[in-house]
Length: 194
Image 1 (cartoon, rainbow, N blue to C red):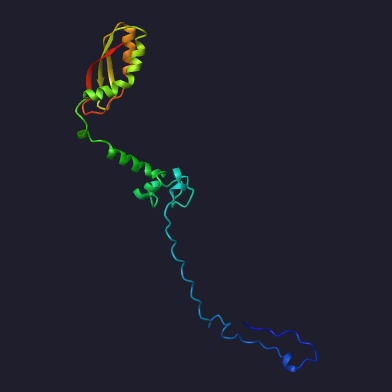
Image 2 (cartoon, rainbow, N blue to C red; image 1 turned 180 degrees about the horizontal axis):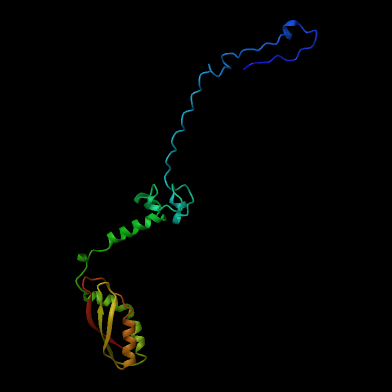
């Protein structure tokens, strides 16, 4: 860079009066200056484990590696171990459903039909309701009951009753009973004493 001499007062020494242009020093000359190497690139960010306690329902909060539009099971760190530690993450729902399906008894493990103990276990909880239908009447109510393989009552018909109202009330009470699961369900006639 050229440097211009400053204005000099009259009577100043001759050396100061000369106007000369100073040549730039090699350190100042851009042509001779060595280029500065670029800084090294920053190291890649560390991968952090996903904390599902802060990313419920894909709200996008917390450092979960995705925003609200990213499915939870696509996020890093959502696996069986993470779900064991904190099963509130949305992706854990799929794993819970899968585990429940695997735990449900296979149809080969189920009995073919209802045995007498399973019939009693299903009827006992509704006996008081059937007895209340009698309203002081004496006699017997006999019901024909069909049960699905899932253990739900599919039909109830009155075989015998002191009167129609008592029979209808008893049938309604028995229709709410639940039984053990079987491969083929079952049908039976059950007598209730009033």
